[in-house]
Image (cartoon, rainbow over all chains, first blue to last red; front, top):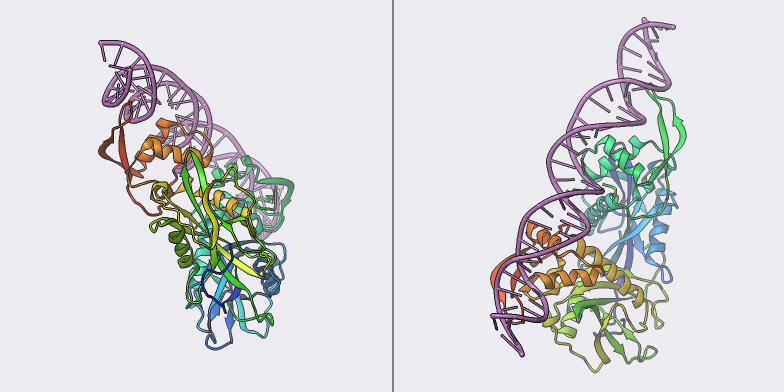
Length: 225
Length: 225
DNA sequence: TTACTTTGTGTACATCAGACACAAACACTC
DNA sequence: GAGTGTTTGTGTCTGATGTACACAAAGTAA
């Protein structure tokens, strides 16, 4: 309930941060911005911002996501709330963090004059991060790994059509371990997560691969691996 | 990151709510308070309150927990943040919700003049709740069910020593389905979640039951069921 | 001593997970 | 158009795990 227990005239600000992931060049990448504002000048951080008066944190996270990447139909879920009183040197700010997953192809990175730079960083080689954003990304990666195993979220990291090899690579890259090809294919097909489209991707100097699509492009709980 | 993107001079308040569970009389119970304050007079709600300026939401949740139940060593974890702008009729309040699990025996319910009443309610027969607390409890129950299956959290619902039948009842009540006795025992023993103490609980007009204890009384991730 | 109640234990069967290798299909080169 | 290179696509066997199931043992109370 929400009636005051402490004297508490608060001056706490509420922000949202969006840990945006994609898989690209064989690595799990997180989108980071480079800050201009003192005292964080030059530091990298997860994109975010103070929420508006009538805005939900989820709306704010989606706004940040589209502003930065141009993508609007991505998976977005609340991660956790970070509220250490000392997390921001400039005052008490609690942040409701979100995780977003976008398909690499769809992204058109947009920078604003507010930031010095915007780019993808491999999660295995992150730069020094402002605030508690190192923890935040770590928690986000853990969540992503877990969800990949027991849901179909991978749909949000791939275009509408893809080969099973591409899907398998998503799993191998994020989980950080090899996956057996035959067992993996049997599994996603038997579980009905993906369905063949009949069409094939020609092109390479090799046997063409059948294209598949997710049966549902929305969160579904299924033990995948 | 946390620099303003919107003009945003905020007057959003931050609260914490604690969904406190116990198992008692063969049911999963949630602790609720009955409110006095208008416009919620007479309504039931999850205990909570606005957080202090220098206080974390977790500290606030623990404070609420001990204030209401007298229990200090319970499992407590962040659940989610609820931030619909209309969730509180009196103004914009976002709430960081926590889940707490306490052993029924330890609890000494304490009421304050702030509330009309404080009591345990079976989660299957809740009264009408204020705010978005119906959703909040529902999400908490889901989380509890999930965690029971793949962690050892049940420790926080039982006293230091207990019989395997009592442990099994916790699982059956919360999961809402019967559990096979022999398979359950083999599982918790083989996994090393609990260990026998050698002592037995005499008393009933029947064969005495051996008392067991959790090997670790802290969160551990293990596939239990 | 008998009746009652709850505890404590083992096995057989079905299902699932994990390891593993080779032929098929295309592009490119000569 | 034959040969080479590269990636796709497929089935079986084995060990591990999950699931179903029934009865003797140990107390108390009468």
